[in-house]
Amino acid sequence: MKIYTKRGDAGQTDLFGGDRVGKDELRVAAYGDVDELNAFVGVAAASGADPELADLLRSVQSALFDLGSSLATPDPEHREKYGIAGVAEADIEALEALIDRLEEPLEELKTFILPGGSPSASAFHVARTVCRRAERAVVRLARVEGESVAATSLRYLNRLSDALFVIARHENARLGVSDVAWVGRSTAS
Image 1 (cartoon, rainbow, N blue to C red):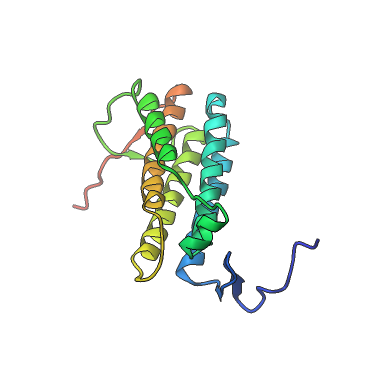
Image 2: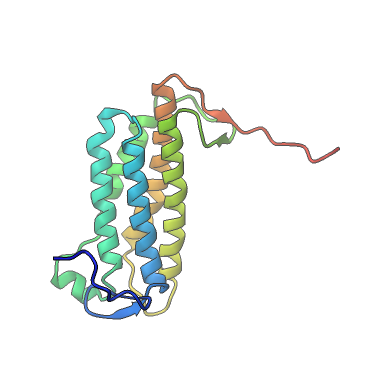
């Protein structure tokens, strides 16, 4: 089977369930942003991240793939018929448990921090910002009358961005690199 079909050459794509839509549709943008997020989580995981997080990060990537599949299937009945579940409450709870576990030994934040520090922390900060963009795209889609987006999708992305932030801080702490404190700049001359 060839990887190219030429069906998208005119700017359209197929949703799961047969609908053909423009590649600039909100739904396509939403699952495209989730796909990009998945790729950035993969980059962050491969950036020298804590090996103890490898299984969890693969689980996150699988959940994001499930989420993207759900978004690519607009009809809830079609999702049910084909077992496209999206993300579950258990996925959100796993992120919350991770956040609690990784955050406990970290120094309390007393200021905003800049994205950076170690290479792996920086990669997780990039993944976090892409996660926020994906979340905005899914929120836009969910606000359209007649569109179907599971509430767990929004909650999962919101929690995942928090988790990616904490993982970035964990990476800096694990590597003995300080988080970079933000210091506001005065505009007075």
